[in-house]
Image (cartoon, rainbow, N blue to C red; front, side, top):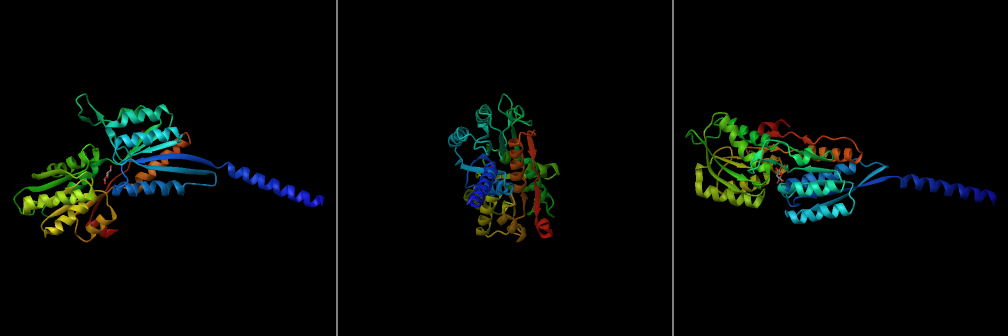
Length: 337
Ligand code: BGC
């Protein structure tokens, strides 16, 4: 009887010790707000944030991730941030709807003592007249617990232009001595859109080519809008359109549909460029239906964002800026993969 009691007691103690040990697993609360869930590229990015956090979990450390959809509405996103603060998030990862609201949002998060990782939409430094300065943003530089993880959009624009310059006819299909293009832009407030628009063309003029802009429209990163704008431009300017630059692949996929519908053929009578290297776009490059795209490395960026979030959770020192390189993706690159 005594022996049974001793065994039962010992077993109970063991169970007690075991549950004590597992109760020690630390769960960090991570709040992530994405500017808009329907964005093709940000969908890949946010899924990888979740996957990568999960892959870093151990018996002792867990991450509880709350993923919020900013619905492209800054007021909605500000509310989400306030909810994150009241829920006592241990770290926040933020893909701003409006970079011009960065100050207000950063201030609230910093005042609550929560570390912050900004991703994909870089807040900018402006001068007194509202012109963009080629400088780091003070709201980030002045806060040891705040950083930005992104890619330098100038590089992606330059790569787009270079892929045209590297073609045998340098994009001048009709041989009239100039490259006539249309530009389909993302959200104009977004630095990625501004830089891609500027640097794609700059790469051509820097290389000594003459360019002519037939049309420049805002497609807001959206596939349907890209298709509509490209279809309109093709019916208005017809064969004069030699190059279609799109600030991202979603819009380039739309443009591809419009190009096919207009009976044009990429590589023969028109060229088409995007950015992101979405799977569908890479397939089009492979099939010769897109001239090129640029890898916007969502894996590298999401991992860098999560790694720095983990550093912040561990109280380690961080940098204010983390940059991930773009990669040129033309047919030669795809075929070599
Ligand atoms: C991507 C776009 C995306 C945008 C969202 C850009 O870096 O290239 O596809 O829509 O980020 O902010």
